[in-house]
Image: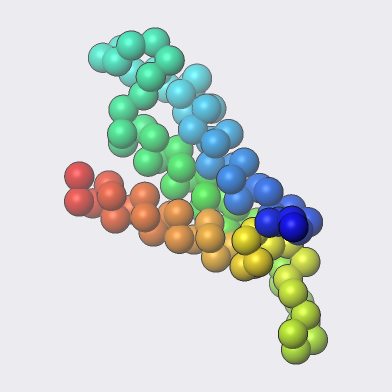
Length: 97
C-alpha cells in the first residue's frame, strides 16, 4: 500500500528541508547549537508547506475524469491540500502563541 503517488512525498520533504535550511542559515544565539525556537520552526514549516502547496496546484492542474485520482497525492489526497492544512496549523499556533 503506497501512501503517496508521483511527487506526493514532497508534502513532508519540503517542510523538513525548509526547517533545516532555516536552522542552518539563521542560527539563534540564545539556544543551544542544533536547536531552534518555536517561531523559527513554525516559520520553516509554514514556508516549506506553502511552497509545496503551490507546487501541488501546478502539478495537479488540469481536468481529470470522474473518479480518477490525482497524479500527485499524499494519503490519497491531492498533495496541495495536506500542505495547505500544515500552513493553516502553523499560522494558528503562531497566532495563539
